[in-house]
Image (cartoon, rainbow, N blue to C red; front, top):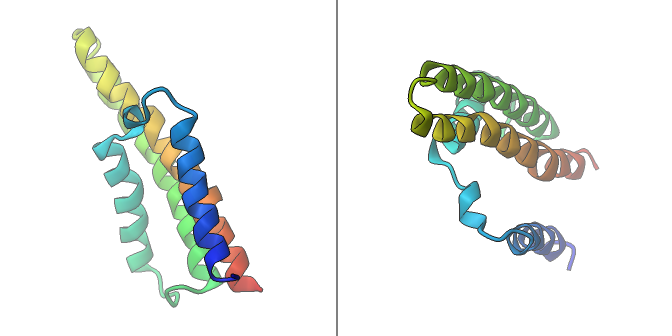
Length: 120
């Protein structure tokens, strides 16, 4: 049961999040996903830390937060660049906000628990 407990918790987290929203698909944004997970993955490739260790997950969490902040700035720049076209502001705002959401979700609900499990 000890191996199944984190998997059940992870799936339960997704199910409860999806059930709490009217339209969960509104939270899926491909550019935001690419910014957060792409930048985090590429940054981890630069490190000299063994994959799966506690330090790896600590760095993954920090890189995710950094890429979330950078994605927010990218979204704001896109939004300010399209002020003359009100229809283009919405997708840019989605990038700005959802990158932070993805970074916080990954950092606190995936990387931090994995880091804590590896430290024990």
